[in-house]
Image (cartoon, rainbow, N blue to C red; front, side, top):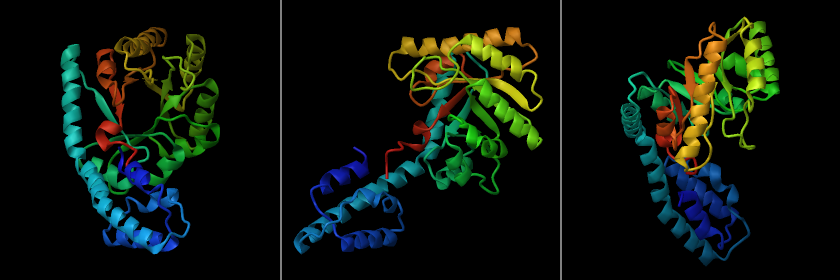
Length: 304
């Protein structure tokens, strides 16, 4: 159970006062930790009897070192996680009888700048972010060489900001969005690399092209745009543990890539981005040459 939920479960029946919150914040400051200060919003604040307050303080201080130690251990394990992941990628390549390069994108959404800097210092230089606002608040990181791609759904009103700050937009899911990106890229005299996102699972919770007709119409337009550079395709696998279902979705994206290359030989479909922490091995077996991994590198996002 994540530390926050563990503490919350134990404190839900115990009312906490303003003075207790101050004690907590003071204790956190003394431990040079910010892991809990931003998560105190769930604490209820009536006024308890003094003996309950003392008991709660004792319980909290007992749990605090465990919680903060867990976070530090996860952070310090990035290098270990990276080595393990690279080994697993190699194993998947061997199983697939492949010798080409598999690009690793570290998905840093919800993780702080400090985690990104640690990743960069471990040699990880490609990052993916889901939201323009979060991306803008964390990048650029000065004095480091890296690339950051937008991999989440891009709203029309965020196109201007996205085009200005990202190295690639990997989630183009409509002709309308494509044209907006091109117009903004032209305005600032930039050639914008893109991936077309395809909803291979046809799940309603996902975005992306769902039929070849609309996809090829967009591709036809993209092939004529001077400020757009088509780099390939991207998909998110079905949320299931059924290997056959997941691999079928990935295989369909690979087949679409082959069709696209034949119909548009002037375009370079060099990136096939599919596979995340839970399914990247299957993606590699189906031809992926870029995987997007967050949890397996940075740890779970549901920690303090």
